[in-house]
Amino acid sequence: MPPPKAQKIDLSSAYPCPCRRQGQLVPIALTEAFGCQRCQQIFVVKQDDPTTIEQLSTSYPYKRTWYWTGHQWSTARRRLGISYWVFTVGLSLLILMPLIIWLSLAKPDLNLLLWAIATFLIAVVPAFIAWLALYRD
Image (cartoon, rainbow, N blue to C red; front, side, top):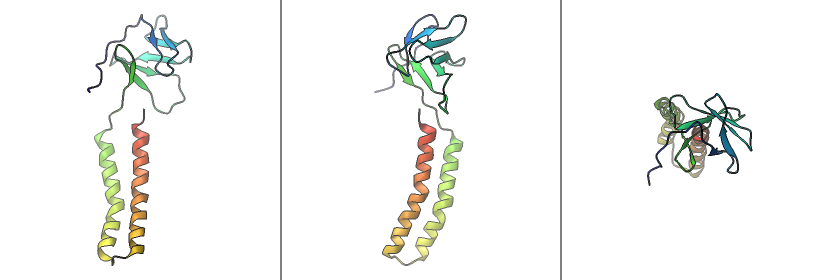
């Protein structure tokens, strides 16, 4: 099922809060911003995309954004750039190439296989954690 289509945000309407379902976003006078009556967070409509709001006052390290579907807010996911993938593949090859060469020169052994698995996990787990950190909402 395709994601719902985003709708333009009306600056004079009230919306449910995307952070807490009980809160209500109300327009702040003379601005292009909304404030939640319950959690006291401030959200602004993005200049380049009038269907998306961005959370301003937060201790969250990444700016959180949502788009309005007409009935609810959906998280706007960031696209990972090509440079991130090139970096990840290059780093993985840099770490895994010595392992591949070492395995091709060594005799097969159970101890060697355990070291190979450990080395692989040491290379893959941090890359996966970095991917999760960059891709989270």
